[in-house]
Length: 126
Image 1: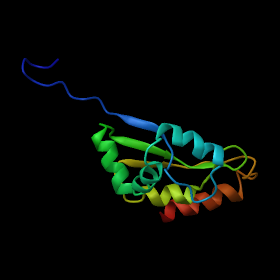
Image 2: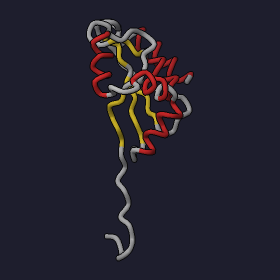
Image 3: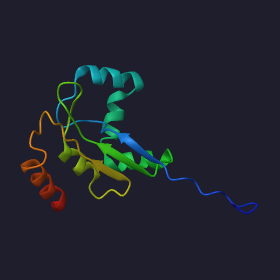
Image 4: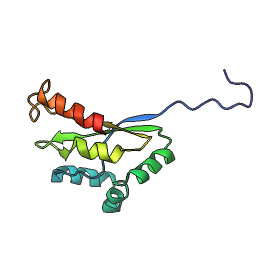
């Protein structure tokens, strides 16, 4: 309980579903069209601005978000490809950004064997 005149501490805020503004692989045109609906003015400027991790962290701070979990997307058939490596590099050295990888079983068919060993090496080297 807070004392009279004392502010109650703000609860921790984590955005657990964030995608990068631009993908190093492909992004289907329908996805770009859908995103333009959310940002009908200056869409290209929005993408360029928030493709910078520092600018994205500033946006989080302005919106009162403490952390963001950034998701890779390996869905070439449905939406597009944002590689695990791209997400890892975007988040590298950033205190507010938490990288999450994507393992698509249609693309990674040996999840318990060589695939797991390869990702373990990449993560430990990061």
